[in-house]
Length: 203
Length: 291
Image (cartoon, rainbow over all chains, first blue to last red; front, top):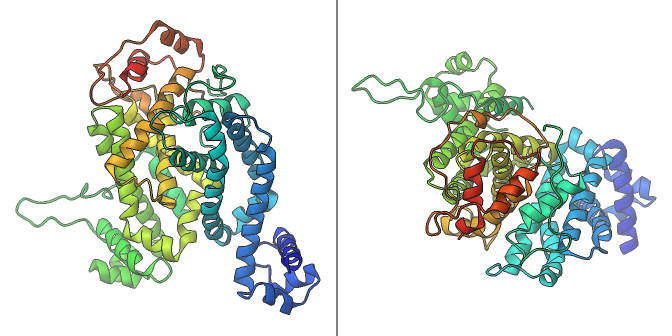
């Protein structure tokens, strides 16, 4: 059962990559997965709508599993956030399917993605908690509150860098250590003091 | 979407659209009942319609009826019809939001007050916006497009660009843009996904968030030297300088003078603007001035 579901989702993702969200039908997904339409409907009783939501959720989860693997070996809170933001930013920029769907049919993607981001935010917060515990939070800082705040900021920066160059490790270090963690953690951390800011292209 | 271009033009250029800000264009003869010009009336009528029926079910007829004008009048004011009206609604609401923010930030006596006031003002307006609430509920794709990825980037840059000059009393323009961008992120994050432990329409909770997470970050960002990435002409640089050294915190610990090493840390960073308020920034941001 789990295998069938996985197979259908992978097949649906392949269809979406090829044709986009709007043009992917239950028939396409069934054909690609080499299962019957009935099997697709049995697995996703809500039909096409459920299938599309499920594939967005699945692809999002895949993205964050990969992110998780990237940051897993990090030794400190600073490192986990720096690696995570840089890797996630790069992956989003280079994510062809995401970029194309955002170009052509964002209205189909965004409601599900926004819904998913709530779960993702909780996941990131949970993930950060042990790092925060290990690092030690500043006096008066609530651990859960800090984890939720940081998860929000990580999500915000990874999807929209604003004025920050997230391909530049020195800037990311500054964003994480100077901006985001200054109020959260107790005392200077590994690798502090900060490297001096590099000259940006604008001066 | 054509509405986007218009909306962002308004913010990026910092232009005031004629007659769209609350009451701005009300030319009222003495002794008469104030009446908004037709443009504003049509826009406000559209907002009412959107709050009830969303964009797809709102027609020019509905708007005209609600505004108490004829269809012909609507088309005279907005020859482009529905699409043009919707674009104007976005422009107007953005201009209203930013003018309200300008008032709040302008009134603030110190940086904490400015940040808390600005975040509460923006969060409250977003929460209480009936048309926005309807769209989020029934036509999320209309709203979310502005809040994701590249569009969100444009929104962040535009919003921070517009609000940064109001922080010029306390920091350099470049730092102000960083800070307002950060504040915008915070507002958007909690507006899109409200938190049960942090309500940013509540001044006390917002003050807690600002003093716990944001002010230390601003101070430490200042000490580290703010890098410049996107260099857009800051109209904050034209802001008139304030005389007294500004204070970061509202109450107690007034000023501690910048310590020599803090001066040094400013000087070391080539990307920190040579800004006339550098001294007062260092004063304001010095650790002693923090609660």
